[in-house]
Image (cartoon, one colour):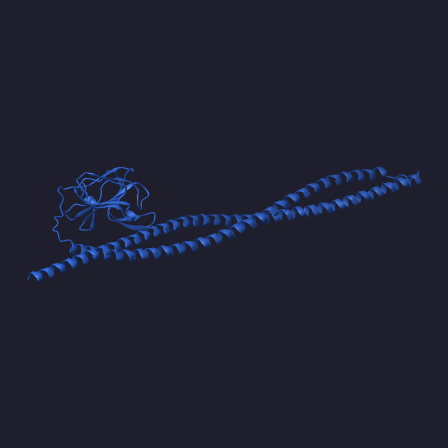
Length: 367
């Protein structure tokens, strides 16, 4: 009979050891899954931030392209008007040159007539010639030539100016069309990049969803193993109706699903996050024994207190740990100083309360 009881005790002991080992392995697997989920969440946030930035650049580029398209149309119209004005000036200049040539020819002709008249008067003194009339014609023609030459000079300068204006419009239009082409290329590249980012984000979301499913299944298994492993009859009650706060500060993330409007993702928070100055005193919400006090992955410097009633309290991201594993702590006893260790960017305290390993909303327990 004694031998039989001894065998039973050995079997039970071995089963307990194996169960504890299995529980430890599953917890490690769950932590790895949670790390992967956190990694995917960060990737999703990064992709969403990239997408938002690319979309802002895309909208700006589209606006610039629309403005450039309008500018090209405006330049084409101005270019057409400038060409018409230039052609009109060239036509007037050619007409003026032709008219000036005729005036010069007329002046030369009248001058020749005046010379012949003078020679004739020398040869025939008694013959009456109208040399004064010819001289008057030559003088008036000369004045007209000077006036026409002035007009020609003005038209030539006007032609140079209008031709320069026309060429500037052509080059401006060509350069603006190049910008339109560049904007079109940039828009295509941005749209391709955004589509690629969307695909990568969707893949990350699918991976996160699958990991969360696996984590939930593993968490359920751990809870079941803990239920089998924990044989002590816990009361699940605290000495007082409400627990004291571990620190006083602003709650920046509440318990449960946290939706980010900026990154369009949902993150599950197993506790609450309290914003405080670095080095703020952290106290135990109730008496118990320190079950864990050291660095732990993304939680940074972590303290876990077993309250011996089926509840555990967790205090993460500390800068300094003031208790060690196995220490007995009393309610309101200082256990650490706040910081920003682990996966946080600002000084804060992440506080969790777990009932038989399962997270519960701390706000239902805190005073």
